[in-house]
Image 1: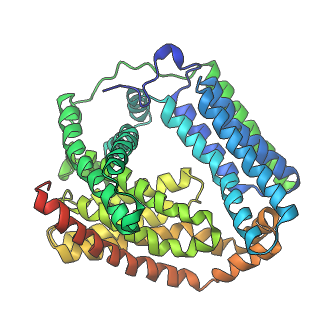
Image 2 (image 1 turned 90 degrees about the vertical axis):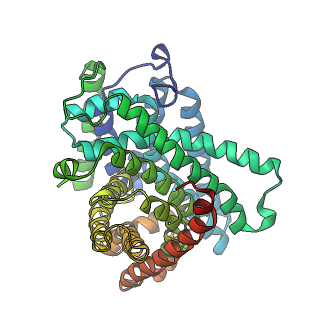
Length: 242
Length: 198
């Protein structure tokens, strides 16, 4: 089992931010994306905001995802411009809807991906301890972070197996879903038991305070990140007022 | 409430199960919600999401033995929706309907299959939090739509979601939550009980 969520080695992780700073940045970007419009100056701000996850992913040496993200974003943006020029009626609806939702949510989703992919489970737990988050929320969140990649892996293996047995959409959509969902759930139940046993062995939920060797703290890069975010928020506020 | 929960009955094992099933639930529901990419289907999500969500939820019910587990799941759904840019109302509706679902389960002593089905109906109503911004900020939401998608598109989508539709959507989430739970129960009997997984 790897300790980092996506098995990144220490030296490959680029700039290391504090998990709390990352989380704050995530909240700020998500709420800014939620509160601004699409037109004029705000449209420009929206594009700048969309660049934030790209820059952060590159800084964290996850260049492949960053480039893939910015490519998809730009294609969606270009398509929405092109389709509003050439299409009309229901087809325009479909095109604008699909690309619009992409533009609306993709930056926020990529911020979330950046957070999950650059934070190790230990770092996350250390941060939760520092902000005194109750265990009832902390443990489920940690488990979720740890479990998402497992689901992805399980799913790809299950669909490989389904393909090998020629179980596709030809049996009808409900059977197709059932063929994939049921094994996934079965492995979740088993995985849950394994994970509980592993975590209990490491003293999770022991009555005394757990120690953590993971060093987290605010450094210059965190200050930079947060001041950029704060500056952006103030700027958006001022534009909104003006 | 939460810190008390740890002492009273929520063991680490329960919390780990909350995490695992929240992860599976959110992935399955979000996969179904991809249909929302075609915006005319947005109101339909209260039908599809509860139906597919019922399958992991009913399996989750076999792991729920004490108060608070469904509430925490609701809180997590709210946090994820808030961070995912779906608006902040799910931060209220998630814990609220989670708590109500928990109370229903508690009244059945966490063993009643009927109460489990009912509780999924109630839990599914958290989805309404994602629709509230459309109605509450109707004017600004409409402006945003016009700017982003054009006048005709905005009027069509708004026509699909009048103010009173929030009640219909809530009721729809409940009804299809129950349908989903029954489906989940059927799948559960067909696959998991026979195979001895639970």
